[in-house]
Amino acid sequence: MHEDVERVLIDEGVIEKRLDILAERVMREFRGRELMVVVILKGALVFTADLLRRLPIPLEIECLNVASYHGGTESSGQVDFLDAKLPPVEGRFVLVVDDILDTGRTLAAVEKMLWEQGAQKVKSCVLLSKDKERAAEVEADFVGFGIGDEFVVGYGLDFQGLYRNLPYIGVLKEEVIGELS
Ligand code: 5GP
Ligand code: MG
Image 1 (tube, helix red, strand yellow):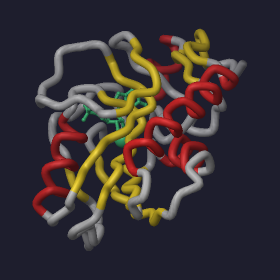
Image 2 (tube, protein in one colour):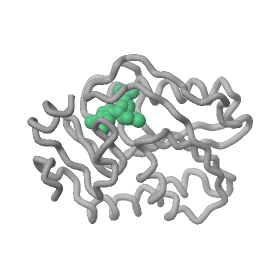
Image 3 (cartoon, rainbow, N blue to C red):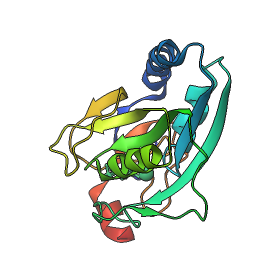
Image 4 (cartoon, protein in one colour):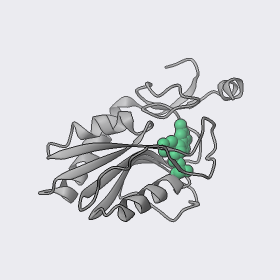
C-alpha cells in the first residue's frame, strides 16, 4: 500500500470482477448499436480503459475535459467545459463515463449538453457513487460501487493531480491532505 494511504476501500481484484458485470450490462443495453463512449477526463481515464476492453462491440471514443474540483477535496459548485469543440454526438447512442458521482453537477451538466448536441440516447456509467443527497437531480444508469461520503483517490481519481495511478480506491491520511492543501 502507498505510504500516503490510510486504508484501501476497494481493492484491485474486486474492481476487476465488478467491471465484468458492468460490461455485461452495458453490452445488453447497446447490443446491435454503434456506441459512442464519452470519457470525462481525467478521472474516468483508467476506469474507461479497463471497461472498454471488456466491450467487444463497435464503438468510438470521445473525450471531454470538465473541471469542477479545481484541485481540492470539495466540489466548487461550478462545472466548466474546457474543450474548444464538443463531441459530435448528433443522432448517436452515447455512454458517458465518469469516475465518481458526488454532487451530481458534472453528470447533469454533461448529459444536458449531450442532449442539446442532438444525441439519440444517453446513458451514464460511473465507477463510484457517493451515498448522499445530490445538488443536481441525476443518478447514473450503471454504477460500479456505492461508497460513503468521503474523499477517495486511486484508479483514476486524484488529489492535487496525484494518486491516479494507484490500482485500488483508497482514502488518504489526514496529514497528507493537510500538507498538500
Ligand atoms: P460532482 O459534479 O458529481 O460533484 O463531482 C464529480 C467530479 O468531482 C468527479 O468527476 C471527480 O472528478 C470529482 N470528485 C468527486 N468526489 C471525489 C472524490 O472523492 N475524490 C476525487 N479524487 N474526486 C472526486
Ligand atoms: Mg471528474
